[in-house]
Length: 590
Image 1: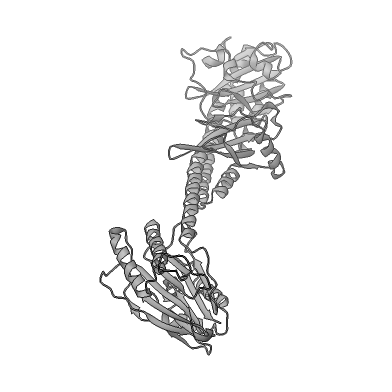
Image 2 (image 1 turned 90 degrees about the vertical axis):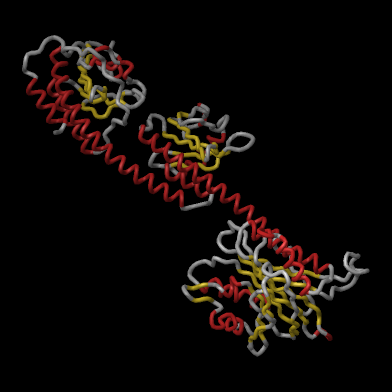
């Protein structure tokens, strides 16, 4: 039944005789119910306004209103009819109610000595409490500008109206709360999905603020804690984008950033901070894995109170946001560390080799969050006076080494083997060990790592100039690595080298070297299996001489152009990003 019909029914019954006062209950009602009482649907507001119009007509009052309680005990005007002035947000409270209201009985105020009448600017008033299951949920009042306007009988009539209005209000409120919470739950689920979908710290904080504004608050700021010093203002967002910069400036002028231990109002903004940050402000700690990492601050303009449901939802969102921000922070730290480690495992540069164009490509898989197992190196092997360890002989270098390898797996353990291999290659080459002996020594080093060791495929070679500068001679050994390919100027492609065991498996391997002469215009291509095993469905790039055909199409290109074309072909081969590192070395005799 609607509130209007309840008021009219109570009006028809009001002709029955009544005494001067209603019977009092033996115990006062409990504290106000903990909920947001304002009805927000047009139908709910219209029903209240119809009921109040009936109350005003029945009691011949100049105005009528329904006041509903909120969690903090304040009374808020939910609907009114004929009121000339509504009270401010902090003028009405259940603490101002007299003993009649606390006992659950109507009362009459003949003048402005009653705090509720004074707040409503009424010279006289009739009021009755609205109750549900023994809890005070609000008041229905009729007001007049004339002192002594109402009689006890008017209070009794209003009490009967209030009894039925309370039931219809509670039904409407429960239905609205159910609809509201369904919407909030959907919002929380959507917000959780969005927060889980990014691992970028700046983007996560921006997303948090934009989820809050304008649905829960007019503006939102995210702070991050620092090891030393005040919290840092990381992100600010206002419902009016043109006011965001002014809001940031006002927050920057705050004496100290928020460090809340629990959700609650924040009073850290100076009174003169400006209109952007004035009003209701609440701060929520961002706590992840038992550690506070910052704070979320939300605000509304002066006079615009936060509904309790909005604060509860903001608190839930802050918990999820804290974990998302911390995950993004940890991911960023891991990515930075992995990138630094990856850079340390790659050579600082590629030397110039007379008569030879050299181009290298290295492309780690994924987003760089984990160190890959592929590596390459090209370095000088200068002559030393008195043999290895002696001072470098002045004059041009006549010998260079190169290597390209792939450690089984990724992560720190693979990185350890990568670092061992790359640095050992340079050290052993400086001792002027032949290429096969270098691989033999490196094989024993990896086996000596026991469980920490990893399988390693490696192609290692030495470059020396041919007589009369007619290209270069390459002495190479392939330990389980994809064989290198040679492209002739006429477009013919063929493999070179013989397959030998990979490193880290057998202890008594005797490696041998293959010699290749690279004449002017010929190209030597060395790749890791990230190239040959690039996948598109059930097909690999290297299937059916696929890499050979790709290289044959590079006839006449420079070393850089060959490398770029193969790199592009690997990227374009499949619709998904490659899940393996890609490394290649291109040597072209010129």
